[in-house]
Length: 142
Image 1 (cartoon, rainbow, N blue to C red):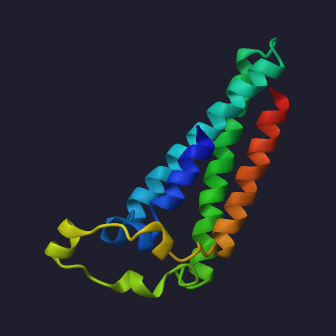
Image 2 (image 1 turned 30 degrees about the vertical axis):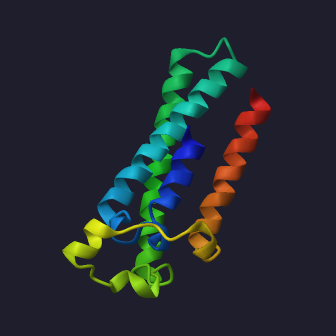
């Protein structure tokens, strides 16, 4: 489930595909929070399958550790974005475009063969690496 949510988040931020319907900043923050919770809960499930005698205290420690890791990651990403100029490295040139109400209502995704190949920023590449690592760990443990 976490991997599907991350891929959906990437799709929901693709301006070429969704045009005026892309996620805003607050929705991305909320979705990242939900992804973090799903990943921690998935790790608890994996640990409980691999180690059936896992105690309740150990599960709580995993949850607390995941929460701390999430807070540190969010703080680190916030500092990094400020340091890099408020995320200007990830902004597409078209993102400043303001759509009219009619354009928003009538928006249609272009045909698949008309879409440009996805360009992954350094941030997206990093998180895709984290996702791959997570998938390898979870799939090898079950």
